[in-house]
Image (cartoon, rainbow, N blue to C red; front, side, top):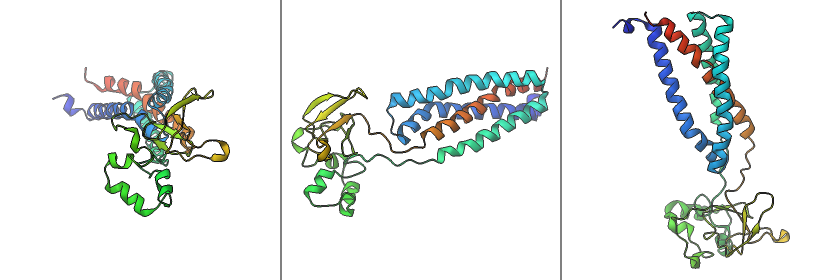
Length: 251
C-alpha cells in the first residue's frame, strides 16, 4: 500500500510498461513495415531494421546513463530529461505517416497486361478492376497466358517482370525456363514468360527477375533516419528512468 501512495513511482512504472509495450510492437512489426512499404524482401527488411536498432538502442542506453552521471541529475532533473526524450520521439514518430505506392501485382492489385491486350482493354480499365474485386484470387491469377501451366496458389515465389509488374510466381508469369543469373543482383532471370509484356526494342519481352520488384519510392533514407532518432531517444531515457524509479522507491 505504501507504493500506491507514491505517485512518481507509479507513473514511472506505468511509463516503463508502456515503453516496453511499444518496443515489443516495434520489434515485431518494424521489419514487416519496411518490407511492405519499400517492397523489400524479408531478409533485407530485417537487416536494415537491425542496422537501426543495434547502434541506436545500445548507444542510447549507454549515453543516457552517462548523461545522468555526468550532469549529476536528481530525480526531478531525470524526469524532465525523460520527458524531453519522450517528446522528441513522439514528434519523430510522424514519419510513419509516409506512404509509398505498392508495386502492382498481376491478378492481385492489377490486371494482367497481356490479358488486357488480348481483350483490347487499357491497363486501368474500370471493368477489369471490377473483375479483380469481385473474383476470387484463384480466378484472377489464372488467365489465358498461364492457363495451361497448372499453377498452384500455395506456391508463392514472386518474380518481377520486365514490364514492372510483379507476378505471384514464375508459373503465374507463364515462364518456361531459367535463362541465366543476373551478374549485378545474383538473381535468376526467367525467360519465355508469356504473361510479361516487356520492351521489345530492348529484348525484354518475356523476361522476369526472381524476387520482388524494386520500389520507386525514395523515402527510405528519410524514414531510416527518423527511425534511428526514435529508437535512440527511446532508449536514451531507459537507464535514467530506471534510476529515478529506484530513487523514488521507499527504503
